Image (cartoon, one colour):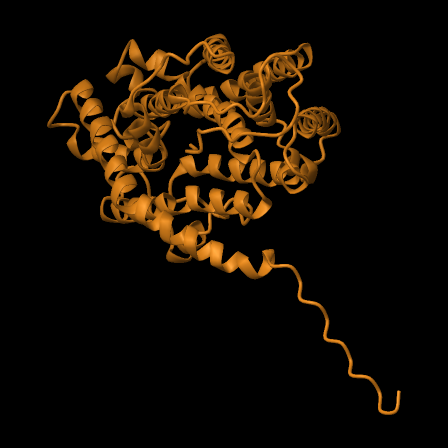
Amino acid sequence: MLNDLAPRPSKEAAPARITAGRPRPRLAALDGLRLVAALMVVFHHYVGYGGNADASKNAWTKPVDVVFPTASWLASYTWTGVELFFIISGFVICMSSWGRSLGDFFTSRVVRLYPAYWLGVLLTTVVVTLWPLVVQPLDLKDVLLNLTMLQEPFRVGSVDAVYWTLWVELRFYLLFALVVWKGVTYRRVVLFCALWTVASILVTAGRAPFLNYIVMPEYSPYFIAGVAMYLMHRFGPTLLLWGIVLVSWVFSVRQVTLYSDGLAVSLGRALDAKPAIALMTLGYLVMIVLALGGLSWVRGKWLTVAGATTYPLYLLHEHIGWTGIRLLRFHLSPWALVAVMTLGMLVAAWLIHRFVERPLSALLKRGITRALEPVRRPPEPAPTAPPAPGS
């Protein structure tokens, strides 16, 4: 869900065959993978879920396994696109933070996340207020709190259910900001991965709610793996980095299994965790191939556009899409309706990126940069007291 895909040079000595500081081209494959992850989630919500376990209240007004007898089985597992998002996020945040100050890091995250999000909150609220067919609108005060992206810690519902991942991302940024604050180096990033892994194990064993909220053991393996994969990409693979990725994958297997069991209860039908584990593992493997340079041949300006529209697509597709399906379900065949809604969401996402996100992001960046200037400026020396008379 992030857009900073061009690595920055570093003066740090490389521990392996890759020379740190050598400029690298934009990783176009990352843009493509982000789009794949987003479309996986769209497919899950439209074909594998539908919005409500009660068929009469979901987008199709009947069980999705009746509407899509075969495809709904696969779509029941493509929620693993979120796991791929988190791995990509770990990779990209580590890459884009190299050589940046804490103020630059803060600015880049705010500028990247909020403009499209604000419009997504407003558009989704308007749609579900006009047509409360699948999802009921929130109260105005809850919508206003949603605009801060902090509704989760205040235990307020989200305007769109997919927003839960944004609070996970924000907590990851806060944790990684500790590395950025000290200065991003190979040693500090490896130490960060190791400490976060150990903390996740200890919190899981101790079951401490507050620490669990900070450490996020249910999501940490994906971010840690992505960060380690970027180190592989920048410096070359080492046994230590392979170990971090392998341990993260083992923990991910456990988390995917737990989530799959919980989703089965929500959907009201049995789910085998093995397909979800297989899709999650495929995401790991593809990202490893990318980190090792195996996808450097992927090129195309359209991938940059695709990557830019991924975040707005993710924000818009669920509740608006379910409402559109409910309104049009008698006018189009199911597959035609899924295609129309997906294409419509892609077009809307591009329009938001081109005419809202880009100009508003530029304005927001200038405003934040000016606001941080007094903070960055060296403190002025204290005024010297004039000498006493006769001294």
